[in-house]
Amino acid sequence: MGLPATTGMNLRATLLPCGFALPALLAACEGPPGGAAPARGTEVHSAETAGLLADAPLREKLPTPAAVEAVPVSGDAPAYVVRGRSGRPPAIVFLPGVCSNASAYLHTFPEAAAAHGGVVAIDGDEPCPGVPGFHTFSWDTQKQHRRLEAALAAAGARTPREGGVTLVGYSQGATIGEKLVYAYPERYSRVMLIAAPVDPSVAALRSARAAVTCACSLDVTQRMRSAALRLSAGGVPSTYLEMPGCTHGNVAKGEETFGAAFAWLDEHARQ
Image (cartoon, rainbow, N blue to C red; front, side, top):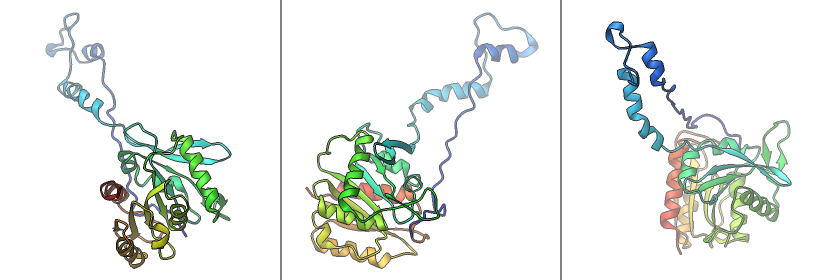
């Protein structure tokens, strides 16, 4: 099963200043020592407010926190998107597992997603019985490819990206991702497989320019570690990453793990 839990998820809090009092209001409320009215045109600030105003240019330069947005897709459920900081269309796609929620997963690594070109995530095309809002993928590889293409187009990637996109699959999504890499090697050129339910196939992934395998430390670590070794022996640049203290379907240290995975794929992808 691929139900994401909050255990291990990175919760981000963005602290914003309460605001700045207008100089005129400060002058009226505080006034100078002794109660004398300030001269006309004089700006009066408390020491605290002066410090806040001095820091204002610094705050204006800070990047806006990455956000997960729902994007309508014609004829399908919405896709979930984190925009890349470069402003270019997203270059990574994400497929969750059985009875999962794509948005929940994307919320575990939005900053890593934004820093590495943006991510588009889609839910499965079949409902999860008895669990509203959660879905499972059918095993129709061509259909999932069409759904990913439609989601990418809705997110702004209307033409195939030179060099292909990175495909991330968790559990069932990893197995479907493997099938997509095999069927559309030019389109899905880099891959991150997380906790695949069966041993990844070197033959199916031989076209990949680079691969990262991954698992929670309390999950199928040996399977995914072995897959990286077999892929490397088969000529595919590969490495294994492990998320600490979590079980199947969960994410731990999402920003760190996915950021490291995307950076490794960027650095080691063969031409």
